[in-house]
Length: 254
Image (tube, rainbow, N blue to C red; front, side):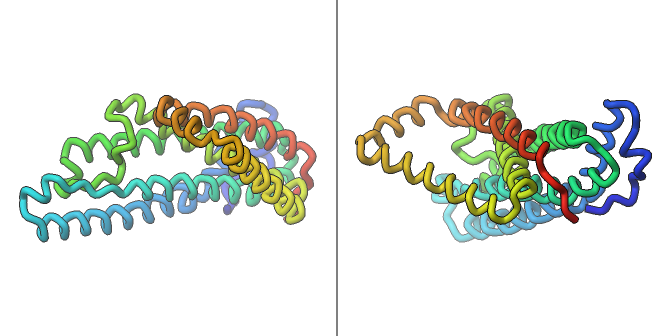
């Protein structure tokens, strides 16, 4: 990220709220990376999806097309993965710069968390709005489900909640991963992903050996998408706390 618009004096403002706000501004300096790139790629996916939808509409009879429903929920998944990568890049690129101007780790972290929460809400509102338009237009006239796939609730409030929580989960996870790298570099990352893999494989093995997969499936079905997503608030909170604790001990390197 570039940082030419913020001076050392600005970043080291004596007012705590102003310092946190300046950190948020620091993250938003590179608007191309935060705003333009994800929506440019999403626009391309949308255009291709719509083209496929219209090709299907032309090639099918009206009766067959009435039964068609093209799901492109993976486009939303792209956005979530991009948010994780964005969080990693934001920490790695701005933390050394902020530390060089004596911004405290606490101010930097609070400003970063607030920035990511704001992005989560803003992007979720826009995606929910586009999903609402998609519903009203019967999938943009081509029965294309890009922003409101079937697994999303028809209730806009629930849809907004799910989207915000998922954005928060991926952003906070990205912050935690970046903090691991800032604290222990490559060796820390290797150990982190190694341990994470062992935990996931261990949980899968436990469910297999105890024949609990039907119970797991029943739990997911009973909770529904909204309930399952709500549970991600727990790891999101843990990642937020862990990221701060790690970053407190991190040594920035340019």
